[in-house]
Length: 191
Ligand code: AMP
Image 1 (cartoon, rainbow, N blue to C red):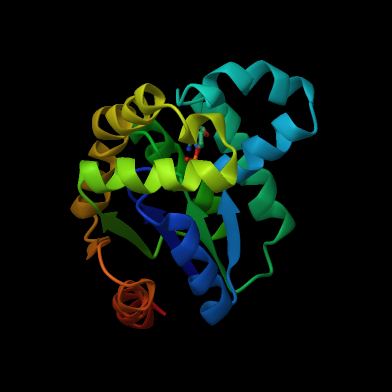
Image 2 (image 1 turned 90 degrees about the horizontal axis):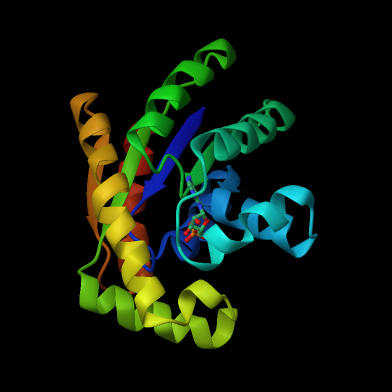
């Protein structure tokens, strides 16, 4: 089983690269952001409750995303593997994730971290906002808050995987295809 945690700040290209990885390695794509947006779109009690946090780029409570991930794994347990996009995003999520994968006889094969500097991220997210319509992609203050949350709460997760020798840093600037071929080399070494 190939289980990839795709990591990087908002706007690093995780969604685009996830699609290519899924296609090549037939993995199940789990994006916590997409799952949360689906809850909001369907106006479920959870979606309504989390709307403010989501719209303002504030991380939702760890237990909410952990529960979502667990349900998706249980449903797709017979797959070739998973790509976790936007998860784990805190040290606590990463620690719980390791523990919760054990009963499934699963572990994270590698964490692929897309590296992109802040100015480029802001430009990309604003551009995406014109198409995505996401409120958190359209306001510069919210975009900066998302990047700050990433730096403060999410970036330390890299150390967690580095200690396990599972961290792979990838230059996230360049053509989609060049970045993907670097990802492919790593995935091929992990299969
Ligand atoms: P994304 O689509 O990954 O940029 O996520 C959009 C928003 O969903 C984030 O700004 C958070 O509010 C929430 N979110 C997504 N994934 C997580 C996570 N793993 N932990 C906490 N909040 C999350």
